[in-house]
Image (cartoon, rainbow over the protein chains, first blue to last red):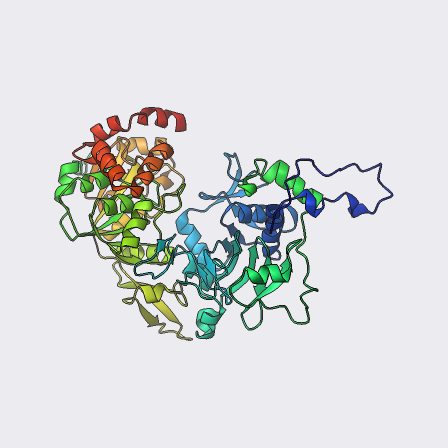
Length: 281
Length: 294
């Protein structure tokens, strides 16, 4: 998808002169924003309904999603400063800050929380497949990889213990693959082979990419939840190495369009959460 | 007042405790509070065929580049601001090291089991992922209690020597962290058959509580066999509040993975036959860096 040109100008926020127009007419339009803005909101939506839970997104766009969710519709989320503190309030990511600390989250406590289940992580995926198997470890044969990546990191423990979502900024045949080279985070097919005692805490929530938003069918296969503006089903299928499902009763033409940020969302992002535009870098 | 026996040691005495083929565990996390002066001393030694257990950063990278590593045990190896450790990647992609890659939390349990002297700790982490395929020695264990869950049994690490770096220590071997996170250094200290600790500064014991709350006193001398003051001992990894990561130096280090000539020059300039004092001179600007970040 080609991102629309970045518009420096803020949408008009005059409240008096255009009162004859419908209330949403001053809301920003797709051409007023970039695909990253839409991705931030889609990541935020992934945390909807979580309530009082450690919201642990990784990477700038997911982080902004978590912060935006907390600043708007999920005020009970617990957010980390990405070092060792849980902090209250809305403040910029990636900047020195003087936050209100609500609790201490050193790495050891983080693992305790993972195992307790009171966490929703959004990780990246170098590769992801139809069942949601994720690879961040290496490309090629793990014994002697073509490209060593991050390693398993916390993916195996995350998936088997609590809800996990993914953000993939470069939707392509290289990232949405038929089969991942290494299973870091297991998918729904792996859970089918396991007893209920092993799979009971497993849940892949949402997969957000630069083309759309995806979730999983009852059979545990990836399906299109929404497509970002100006993206067709053919576009996203062409960039995906496995057949994407449509939810029951939805035709290609009937796929919802991913909601775009409101003026209030954009103001929060531009003025408070991401004044330096880290989401565009 | 009775006084414990001091455990002050030297770099040479620490190195003398290490042997070819040993398993060495290194504290810190990624490119954070790593005992780098000792890591460089190992690079400078004749030691070989080491198994290195670490929440990996440039410790594993440097030791790989210096051909000291037979096997690396890790959940990740990262320089934090540079997500992938280039020297470690090179070693993995060349197939030149053995490895055990674990879930980060499973790694914690390997340390914990060693610290507690039990053979394993059970966890769900790893079930369904390729962690079990990549580590064929890992066994499953059935809970003796209903409903008899099958769990992964993470075996206790078998650690000959642990190395950690603290902000402050006393001469008796008590250690204090003043940064944002202890990481797992208390467990590293407990898990090693022997543990050596470097610290930015050795202080009188009664200074500790003036420097930080009692909760920062997480390294007890009962788990420490030798302690050594090494100012700048974690450079170029971060050691807050004493200093931040030397990002410029880390970039220079990372870039040397591209070309053996660059690596040889780096080795020559900063490591080969260099004492820690000579290293601090060679990395010029360490003092400035320290002031800036303070």
